[in-house]
Length: 194
Image (cartoon, rainbow, N blue to C red; front, side, top):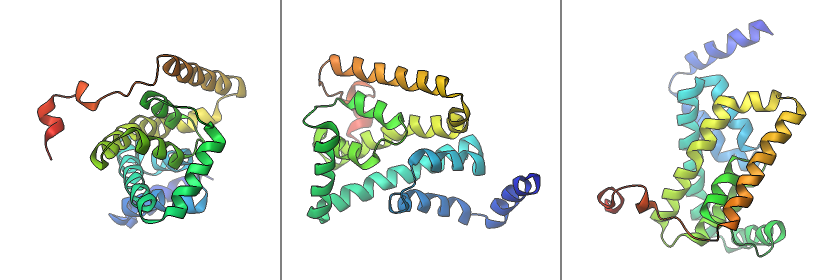
């Protein structure tokens, strides 16, 4: 096992610039392989370390959001399948952007289902991408840095973590279905730039 652990960094060094590109492509084909986001982010932390693993995961997940947006608009049957899944999982429940961000941190919650919610909440492609990129930053950091630790926690600590996230999710839902504007957090000059 030690020789395997030593061989991985050497393999990454030998791959050079192709290693990050292949990792980002893994994020893009991840849905086709039925690999959860958390697994790929943990892998990024293991292969590239916290900083680069997080950076590559943010790029990969942001590109995945872009691809999803384009696919939904190009293929109506794909959109119908995701909408059917949305109705099955959440019925007619309205979610806030804050709740979608919390759900993004929960492992095994369907990434594209949450992207569909973001599409419904936003009016433009730019606004959708802004929230999508903002919504993958913290989960990428969390899973890259602490993902391995979370999966190795005893079952009762994992349960406490998920109960805490569920409580935050519920609290944000009771505050109403208000949409948070990106412009509240950043000056309007930065927001209006193209």
